[in-house]
Length: 192
Image (cartoon, rainbow, N blue to C red; front, side):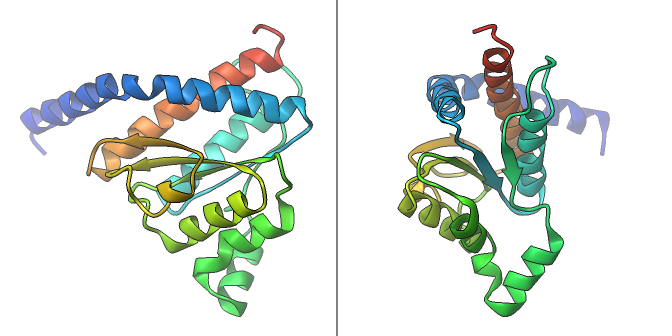
């Protein structure tokens, strides 16, 4: 990859980051809902595939651990972290059911479920969000490409990055999950 190509890639990233600003009001609403979920003793569950699974795990780690401040752990679980459960459900039922089955087992009305998917078409993500919504959870979708994806249809709140490039979408998801973590972290530390 030439230096010129690297400059183009960086310019694409910066340009998309500027356009993501339009998602900040929706992100703020999601942060408020997550704070209210925690105030009511609710929990966060999150999931995705591949790089999106890493984003789901990253968000859960920031909340159960800490983002910037030392404060109480906030209940957050990535449904991607237990390979025995994932492979059991995939083998005994189907891969498409790996998140929905866990959602059915863990999620209570009033909890929040956040799904990550760059395409919004992964059937296991779609089923997980649909099941969460049916169970009375607040559903949030971090997506890309199109706000009309099947996953977005099952989300109360959709944060869709307007790009068809997986790398750029994941970079913006990371930025957005850090902004969400900052807001919730400050609240949990009594700063706002």
